Length: 273
Image (cartoon, rainbow, N blue to C red; front, side):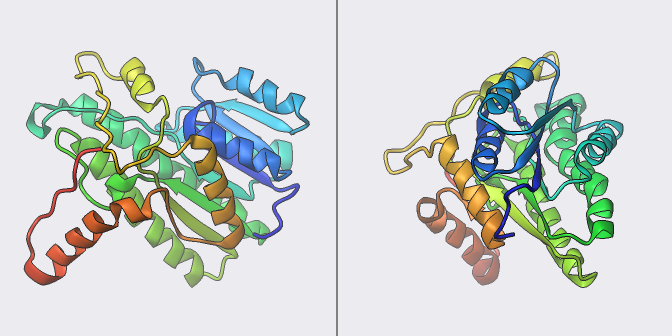
């Protein structure tokens, strides 16, 4: 999708962090926006700011873990703009705790948002995009945790994000199989200053352990969310599947994990970030 001007981008988790940065990059490229987030997020405030700069924006309060709400998001997009061209399944949360000490409620909370939120987005938007036959693109937000296990006490997040990678690869193959002109990218952020920790702690189930910040090593320079937004825009325009924010920094750990699989079968655990 080299020419994105005038096209419609749907972004979940759009009111802050990487999601908002995506919206800003898309708006800068002349796209129309459908911004989706929770009711108590700064959704309307951020949408108003983008409208004041000349971007056409539809907001929609959406809990991505609820299938009916994602169906409603797709229907609202269709009614306002005639359908989506780019869909960014970006909303996410994080939890912490040892696997056997993490409640089923907490497991469900993370997996339903981080993984099923992406599943819901694909199922809600793909059929209409295929039927229209127009060029399109999906961007599914995973994490470097989607490529290797990042730290301990992080299992629901690791499981969900690795699921997003597998889901995205499957989607790519299946869209090609049916001849749909729709590309797929999987975004795997490393160290990005966002409010993921604050939002997760605000929304987490009662009794869940607070999410702590991970230590940042000296050789791991955080990437501003604004740069991630530009990376995503370029990924859509150039039809790139893998979008990694820190490919050089994480390469040794990713390569070591892959070598462990093909050479020795040993488990490799990445360093905590």
